Length: 107
Image (cartoon, rainbow, N blue to C red; front, side, top):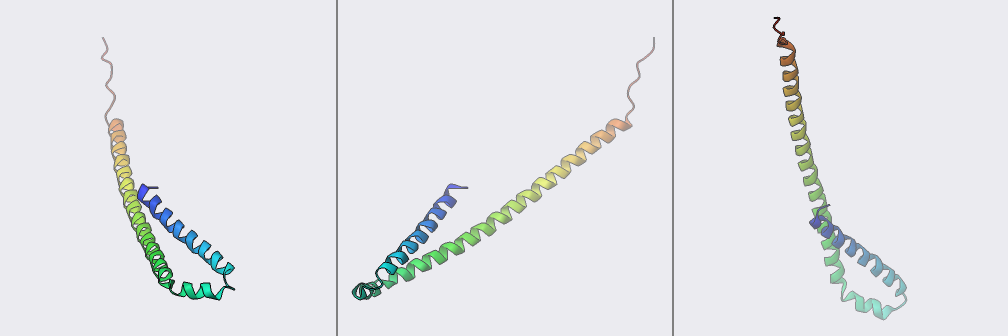
């Protein structure tokens, strides 16, 4: 994988881990009503975090689609080059068959 893709997946994974640990922490604090009221004031962070994850997911889909298109183009180009080389080899073999081998002159 390319370096930028590794960084992308690292950020993506870190945000998912944060949400997982946050949900575990919230589950542990479900009896603390005062904490929940304090958390209500910081709900904007959760909204923007989820929006960021959604944007990262869309970027991942776009990058995946772009890579697939590039790989398909490269594969088509390599197949075309292979067919060209096969045709040249066939022409060389056919040319060698048609030309008679030079006979040794007899003394």
